[in-house]
Image 1: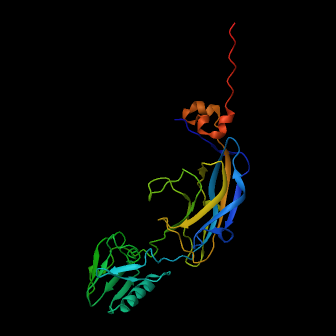
Image 2: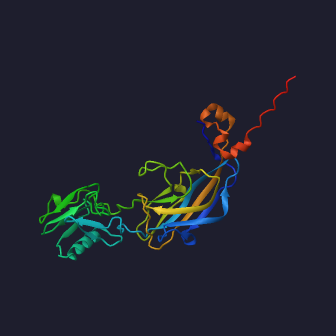
Length: 305
Protein backbone atom coordinates (compact mmCIF):
# COMPACT_ATOMS: atom_id res chain seq x y z
CA UNK A 1 0.00 0.00 0.00
CA UNK A 2 1.39 3.41 -0.96
CA UNK A 3 1.69 6.07 1.69
CA UNK A 4 1.33 9.82 1.62
CA UNK A 5 4.21 11.66 3.26
CA UNK A 6 4.94 15.30 3.89
CA UNK A 7 7.91 17.55 4.47
CA UNK A 8 7.54 18.78 8.06
CA UNK A 9 10.03 21.58 7.41
CA UNK A 10 8.81 22.62 3.95
CA UNK A 11 6.09 25.15 4.73
CA UNK A 12 3.98 26.46 1.87
CA UNK A 13 1.50 29.23 2.73
CA UNK A 14 2.05 31.10 5.99
CA UNK A 15 0.84 29.38 9.15
CA UNK A 16 -2.29 30.62 10.87
CA UNK A 17 -2.75 31.19 14.60
CA UNK A 18 -6.25 31.09 16.08
CA UNK A 19 -6.78 32.65 19.49
CA UNK A 20 -9.90 31.39 21.24
CA UNK A 21 -11.41 32.78 24.41
CA UNK A 22 -14.26 30.56 25.58
CA UNK A 23 -16.22 33.64 26.63
CA UNK A 24 -16.54 34.55 22.92
CA UNK A 25 -17.57 31.04 21.86
CA UNK A 26 -20.85 29.16 21.83
CA UNK A 27 -21.20 27.06 24.95
CA UNK A 28 -22.03 23.48 24.01
CA UNK A 29 -23.11 22.49 27.55
CA UNK A 30 -23.72 24.24 30.86
CA UNK A 31 -19.99 23.88 31.55
CA UNK A 32 -17.55 26.48 30.24
CA UNK A 33 -15.06 23.71 29.44
CA UNK A 34 -17.08 22.66 26.37
CA UNK A 35 -17.41 25.25 23.62
CA UNK A 36 -17.27 25.72 19.85
CA UNK A 37 -16.51 28.45 17.35
CA UNK A 38 -17.42 28.92 13.68
CA UNK A 39 -14.94 30.85 11.54
CA UNK A 40 -16.15 33.50 9.10
CA UNK A 41 -13.60 32.26 6.58
CA UNK A 42 -12.58 28.63 6.40
CA UNK A 43 -8.97 27.62 6.95
CA UNK A 44 -8.14 25.72 3.77
CA UNK A 45 -5.25 23.90 2.22
CA UNK A 46 -4.08 24.46 -1.34
CA UNK A 47 -3.48 21.67 -3.81
CA UNK A 48 -0.62 19.44 -2.68
CA UNK A 49 -0.67 20.79 0.87
CA UNK A 50 -1.25 19.16 4.23
CA UNK A 51 -2.36 20.90 7.40
CA UNK A 52 -0.71 20.35 10.79
CA UNK A 53 -2.41 21.45 14.01
CA UNK A 54 -0.99 21.97 17.49
CA UNK A 55 -1.93 23.71 20.71
CA UNK A 56 0.51 26.60 20.88
CA UNK A 57 -0.41 27.98 24.30
CA UNK A 58 -3.18 27.79 26.88
CA UNK A 59 -4.45 29.43 30.05
CA UNK A 60 -6.95 27.37 32.02
CA UNK A 61 -8.17 28.46 35.47
CA UNK A 62 -7.57 25.94 38.24
CA UNK A 63 -11.13 26.40 39.42
CA UNK A 64 -12.21 22.75 39.28
CA UNK A 65 -12.31 20.68 42.48
CA UNK A 66 -10.46 17.58 43.64
CA UNK A 67 -13.78 16.20 44.95
CA UNK A 68 -16.41 16.35 42.22
CA UNK A 69 -20.11 15.56 42.44
CA UNK A 70 -21.05 12.41 40.57
CA UNK A 71 -17.42 11.42 40.02
CA UNK A 72 -15.57 10.82 43.31
CA UNK A 73 -17.78 12.11 46.12
CA UNK A 74 -19.26 8.97 47.73
CA UNK A 75 -17.97 6.89 50.65
CA UNK A 76 -19.98 3.65 50.77
CA UNK A 77 -20.31 1.96 54.15
CA UNK A 78 -22.22 -0.78 56.00
CA UNK A 79 -23.67 -2.45 52.93
CA UNK A 80 -25.87 -0.08 50.93
CA UNK A 81 -25.33 3.18 52.85
CA UNK A 82 -23.13 6.09 51.75
CA UNK A 83 -22.17 9.63 52.65
CA UNK A 84 -21.64 12.29 49.99
CA UNK A 85 -18.72 14.68 50.40
CA UNK A 86 -19.70 18.14 49.09
CA UNK A 87 -17.68 19.27 46.04
CA UNK A 88 -14.61 21.32 46.87
CA UNK A 89 -10.83 21.47 47.04
CA UNK A 90 -9.84 19.63 50.20
CA UNK A 91 -6.53 19.20 51.92
CA UNK A 92 -5.96 15.86 53.65
CA UNK A 93 -6.87 17.21 57.09
CA UNK A 94 -9.92 19.04 55.74
CA UNK A 95 -11.13 15.85 54.07
CA UNK A 96 -10.65 13.86 57.28
CA UNK A 97 -12.69 16.40 59.28
CA UNK A 98 -15.44 16.47 56.66
CA UNK A 99 -15.80 12.67 56.64
CA UNK A 100 -16.05 12.60 60.44
CA UNK A 101 -18.68 15.38 60.50
CA UNK A 102 -20.75 13.64 57.81
CA UNK A 103 -20.80 10.41 59.80
CA UNK A 104 -21.86 12.38 62.88
CA UNK A 105 -24.78 13.81 60.90
CA UNK A 106 -26.12 10.40 59.85
CA UNK A 107 -29.26 8.90 61.41
CA UNK A 108 -28.43 7.25 63.70
CA UNK A 109 -25.27 9.24 64.34
CA UNK A 110 -21.96 7.43 63.81
CA UNK A 111 -18.97 8.32 65.94
CA UNK A 112 -15.73 8.04 64.00
CA UNK A 113 -12.26 9.56 63.89
CA UNK A 114 -9.98 10.09 60.93
CA UNK A 115 -6.38 11.28 61.09
CA UNK A 116 -3.77 11.89 58.41
CA UNK A 117 -0.07 11.13 58.76
CA UNK A 118 2.09 13.50 56.70
CA UNK A 119 5.04 11.10 56.87
CA UNK A 120 3.27 8.03 55.46
CA UNK A 121 0.63 10.08 53.60
CA UNK A 122 -2.05 7.69 54.83
CA UNK A 123 -5.32 7.98 56.74
CA UNK A 124 -6.19 6.07 59.91
CA UNK A 125 -9.84 5.53 60.82
CA UNK A 126 -11.39 4.40 64.12
CA UNK A 127 -14.94 3.93 65.38
CA UNK A 128 -16.40 2.45 68.60
CA UNK A 129 -19.29 0.93 66.64
CA UNK A 130 -19.10 -1.51 63.70
CA UNK A 131 -18.21 0.43 60.55
CA UNK A 132 -17.24 -1.12 57.22
CA UNK A 133 -16.13 0.80 54.14
CA UNK A 134 -17.05 -0.67 50.76
CA UNK A 135 -14.76 -0.18 47.78
CA UNK A 136 -16.08 -2.90 45.46
CA UNK A 137 -16.04 -2.25 41.72
CA UNK A 138 -19.82 -1.76 41.60
CA UNK A 139 -19.61 1.12 44.09
CA UNK A 140 -19.44 3.95 41.58
CA UNK A 141 -18.37 7.55 42.21
CA UNK A 142 -16.19 6.33 45.07
CA UNK A 143 -13.82 8.62 46.93
CA UNK A 144 -11.50 5.69 47.64
CA UNK A 145 -8.44 7.11 45.80
CA UNK A 146 -8.54 10.32 47.81
CA UNK A 147 -8.86 8.33 51.06
CA UNK A 148 -5.91 6.10 50.22
CA UNK A 149 -7.51 2.98 48.79
CA UNK A 150 -6.10 3.30 45.26
CA UNK A 151 -6.62 0.09 43.28
CA UNK A 152 -8.27 -1.62 46.28
CA UNK A 153 -11.48 -3.56 45.73
CA UNK A 154 -13.33 -5.02 48.72
CA UNK A 155 -14.27 -4.03 52.24
CA UNK A 156 -12.26 -2.32 54.97
CA UNK A 157 -13.42 -2.75 58.56
CA UNK A 158 -12.88 0.15 60.94
CA UNK A 159 -11.99 -1.19 64.40
CA UNK A 160 -12.52 0.49 67.78
CA UNK A 161 -8.79 0.20 68.48
CA UNK A 162 -6.16 1.52 66.10
CA UNK A 163 -4.52 -1.25 64.07
CA UNK A 164 -3.19 -2.08 60.64
CA UNK A 165 -6.68 -2.72 59.26
CA UNK A 166 -7.60 0.85 60.15
CA UNK A 167 -4.90 2.34 57.95
CA UNK A 168 -5.54 3.10 54.29
CA UNK A 169 -3.98 0.57 51.93
CA UNK A 170 -2.10 3.13 49.81
CA UNK A 171 -0.90 6.70 49.86
CA UNK A 172 -3.82 9.12 49.70
CA UNK A 173 -4.16 10.59 46.20
CA UNK A 174 -5.95 13.87 46.85
CA UNK A 175 -5.86 14.67 43.14
CA UNK A 176 -6.94 11.18 42.17
CA UNK A 177 -9.58 12.31 39.70
CA UNK A 178 -7.47 14.93 37.88
CA UNK A 179 -3.74 14.40 37.41
CA UNK A 180 -3.58 16.49 34.23
CA UNK A 181 -5.97 18.26 31.89
CA UNK A 182 -6.55 17.37 28.25
CA UNK A 183 -7.66 19.57 25.38
CA UNK A 184 -9.78 17.61 22.90
CA UNK A 185 -11.15 18.74 19.54
CA UNK A 186 -13.39 17.61 16.69
CA UNK A 187 -10.52 17.89 14.20
CA UNK A 188 -10.03 14.77 12.10
CA UNK A 189 -6.58 13.47 13.01
CA UNK A 190 -5.15 9.97 13.21
CA UNK A 191 -1.78 10.69 14.79
CA UNK A 192 -2.81 10.52 18.45
CA UNK A 193 -3.68 7.37 20.40
CA UNK A 194 -4.55 6.79 24.07
CA UNK A 195 -4.51 3.82 26.40
CA UNK A 196 -8.06 4.31 27.70
CA UNK A 197 -9.66 3.47 24.35
CA UNK A 198 -6.72 1.62 22.82
CA UNK A 199 -7.24 3.48 19.57
CA UNK A 200 -7.23 6.85 17.84
CA UNK A 201 -7.93 9.75 20.19
CA UNK A 202 -9.37 13.26 19.85
CA UNK A 203 -6.73 14.65 22.23
CA UNK A 204 -4.96 17.73 20.87
CA UNK A 205 -2.68 18.27 23.89
CA UNK A 206 -2.05 17.28 27.51
CA UNK A 207 -1.37 20.09 29.96
CA UNK A 208 0.38 19.43 33.25
CA UNK A 209 -1.06 21.07 36.35
CA UNK A 210 1.62 23.60 37.26
CA UNK A 211 -0.11 25.77 39.84
CA UNK A 212 -2.16 25.52 43.03
CA UNK A 213 -5.97 25.67 43.18
CA UNK A 214 -7.11 29.20 42.48
CA UNK A 215 -4.27 29.86 40.04
CA UNK A 216 -4.05 29.59 36.27
CA UNK A 217 -2.70 26.46 34.56
CA UNK A 218 -0.59 27.44 31.56
CA UNK A 219 0.98 25.81 28.54
CA UNK A 220 3.99 27.65 27.14
CA UNK A 221 4.79 27.54 23.39
CA UNK A 222 8.24 26.16 24.26
CA UNK A 223 6.54 23.08 25.75
CA UNK A 224 4.78 22.15 22.50
CA UNK A 225 6.48 19.31 20.64
CA UNK A 226 3.73 17.50 18.73
CA UNK A 227 1.73 18.37 15.63
CA UNK A 228 -1.14 16.35 14.20
CA UNK A 229 -1.90 15.98 10.51
CA UNK A 230 -5.50 16.94 9.76
CA UNK A 231 -7.30 14.68 7.32
CA UNK A 232 -9.49 17.33 5.75
CA UNK A 233 -8.97 20.08 3.21
CA UNK A 234 -10.65 22.84 5.19
CA UNK A 235 -11.84 23.84 8.65
CA UNK A 236 -14.87 26.03 9.22
CA UNK A 237 -15.85 24.99 12.73
CA UNK A 238 -13.88 23.85 15.78
CA UNK A 239 -15.18 22.28 18.98
CA UNK A 240 -13.14 22.23 22.19
CA UNK A 241 -13.54 20.02 25.24
CA UNK A 242 -11.33 20.40 28.33
CA UNK A 243 -11.36 17.15 30.27
CA UNK A 244 -9.55 15.02 32.83
CA UNK A 245 -7.58 11.92 31.82
CA UNK A 246 -10.76 9.79 31.79
CA UNK A 247 -12.46 12.05 29.22
CA UNK A 248 -14.77 13.70 31.75
CA UNK A 249 -15.50 17.39 31.31
CA UNK A 250 -13.98 19.64 33.96
CA UNK A 251 -16.29 21.99 35.81
CA UNK A 252 -14.45 25.31 35.79
CA UNK A 253 -17.21 26.77 37.96
CA UNK A 254 -18.11 29.51 35.51
CA UNK A 255 -14.59 30.66 34.65
CA UNK A 256 -13.25 30.81 31.09
CA UNK A 257 -10.09 29.61 29.38
CA UNK A 258 -7.95 30.92 26.53
CA UNK A 259 -6.28 28.79 23.84
CA UNK A 260 -3.96 29.51 20.93
CA UNK A 261 -4.18 26.91 18.15
CA UNK A 262 -1.63 26.86 15.37
CA UNK A 263 -2.32 25.59 11.85
CA UNK A 264 0.77 25.00 9.74
CA UNK A 265 0.79 24.11 6.05
CA UNK A 266 3.32 21.70 4.59
CA UNK A 267 4.11 20.19 1.24
CA UNK A 268 2.72 16.68 0.80
CA UNK A 269 4.59 16.08 -2.45
CA UNK A 270 7.64 13.92 -1.82
CA UNK A 271 10.73 14.46 -3.94
CA UNK A 272 11.45 11.81 -6.60
CA UNK A 273 14.90 11.20 -5.10
CA UNK A 274 13.40 10.31 -1.71
CA UNK A 275 10.78 8.12 -3.35
CA UNK A 276 13.50 6.17 -5.12
CA UNK A 277 15.47 5.71 -1.88
CA UNK A 278 12.43 4.52 0.08
CA UNK A 279 9.46 3.26 -1.98
CA UNK A 280 7.18 3.77 1.03
CA UNK A 281 7.26 7.51 0.28
CA UNK A 282 5.84 7.15 -3.20
CA UNK A 283 2.51 8.90 -3.47
CA UNK A 284 -0.41 7.29 -5.22
CA UNK A 285 -2.58 10.09 -6.67
CA UNK A 286 -5.65 8.02 -5.82
CA UNK A 287 -4.82 8.43 -2.13
CA UNK A 288 -4.95 12.23 -2.32
CA UNK A 289 -7.90 13.82 -4.14
CA UNK A 290 -5.99 17.06 -4.72
CA UNK A 291 -3.26 15.18 -6.53
CA UNK A 292 -5.55 13.55 -9.09
CA UNK A 293 -5.48 16.74 -11.12
CA UNK A 294 -1.70 16.68 -11.12
CA UNK A 295 -1.33 13.39 -12.96
CA UNK A 296 0.75 13.79 -16.08
CA UNK A 297 -1.25 13.28 -19.28
CA UNK A 298 -0.44 10.13 -21.14
CA UNK A 299 1.44 10.67 -24.46
CA UNK A 300 -0.78 10.25 -27.55
CA UNK A 301 -0.63 6.90 -29.25
CA UNK A 302 1.30 6.81 -32.50
CA UNK A 303 -0.79 6.27 -35.57
CA UNK A 304 -0.04 3.14 -37.50
CA UNK A 305 1.27 3.46 -41.03
